[in-house]
Image 1: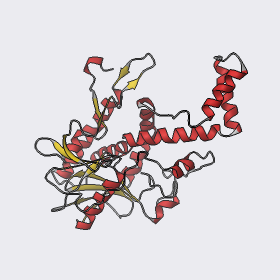
Image 2 (image 1 turned 90 degrees about the horizontal axis):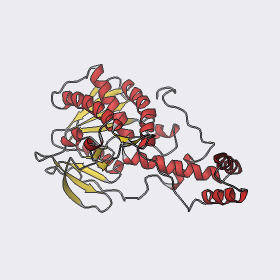
Image 3 (image 1 turned 120 degrees about the vertical axis):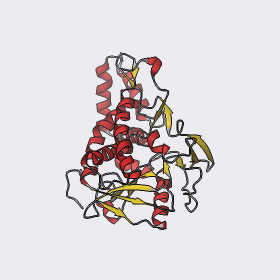
Image 4 (image 1 turned 60 degrees about the horizontal axis):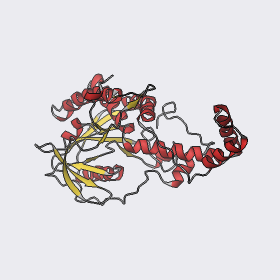
Length: 330
């Protein structure tokens, strides 16, 4: 457990080792705010970071940075492995380095504020949808009765009516719930990525950006046959991209016969920057001397990260999704 006085105030949800590759010698990145369309330079020490974002609350009321420390170990392995590819040109990577990058990509996908927002929105919608049914209301009544906090049935009815009114509250998750999700999902995602082919593309003249959701998912007509139609996730995406530097991006995919180096094209760089702009929750980052977003139209910004139709589908108690980890390969 970390002593309270030594706890870092800012927790990075995109690690500094990755942001540093998109920064200048002063360790600054140019940042685009998707909400306002403004751009400004900022230090990588402040970019993609929130105060106490991964701070865990223990049962005794104390807090610690176990999650942040565990993330740092995974980042260290990934930094070493990615340097072999980006700086030394080593490819294909050995299994240990390949595993390090797969684990980092999987974890990066689930560690962001956007995923925490998704969790909160889905939990909120599911809870309220359940309470709208007779079964859900009966279950909630049983929970309230079991607490022993209510003296009369009328008091329980008042409490039930509060929770049954979706306008009265919204549910949100914190670091504890987010940490449990990361533990549950990241290992499976990492195994899936490790089994796929690993490709990369190195650009000589074009330059790439990154963002606050740097794992980029590319779908196709095949994507709709798994998961929720119209939604791309890391397990049903045809290609999973991660820009590692302004000149290089890696790709996990099942579309190739083996690991491969892809031929660079201007259109390919613009496509990756378009993906970055559309995956960014709020912030886009790039080297101050580059212009990767010059030909990219920024999408409109929305306060919520999941639309009402998707939330309604996810809140459906009858929803069943095949597990792509168990299913056949495409």
